[in-house]
Image 1 (cartoon, rainbow, N blue to C red):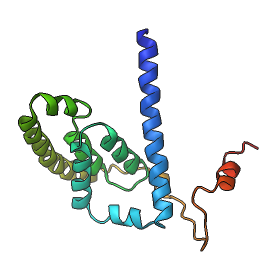
Image 2 (image 1 turned 45 degrees about the vertical axis):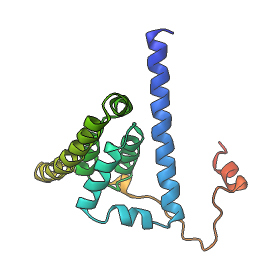
Image 3 (image 1 turned 120 degrees about the horizontal axis):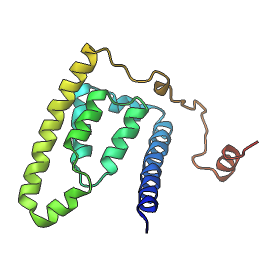
Length: 162
C-alpha cells in the first residue's frame, strides 16, 4: 500500500470516529432534553476532571469525545487542553503491555498535569480574550411531548436530498 493510500485510510478512519462522536453527543443531548449538557457544563473543575479522565483512558476515543464536546460548546478551552495533555493515545496499550506499573503511574501523573494545564489554559484564554464559536453553542432541542428515537421513517425523511 502506498504512503498516500495509507494516509488517506487513516484520515477517513479518524474523520469517521469524530463524526460518530458528534452524532452520539447530539443524540444523547436530545434524548436527555439538554440535561447532559447542563451536567457537563456544571463547573470548570468538573470539566477539567472529565477532560483529564477522557484523556487518560487508553486509546484515542476519549480525545475524540472531548473534541466533539468542545466543538458543541459543552466544555471550555481549558477542558480540551486538559484532555490533550493527559492523553497518550493508542501508545497507552503498548505501555500497559510492556511496563504496566510505570504506565499507570504515568497516566496518573498525566491526569494531574492535565487538570492543572486546563486551569492555566482557561486563565490564559480569559486574559487573551479567546472565545469559542458562538454559533456552536446553539444545539436544537425538541420540545415535543412525544418523539421517536431513531424511527425508521424519521431517519429516512432526514436523509432525503430534495
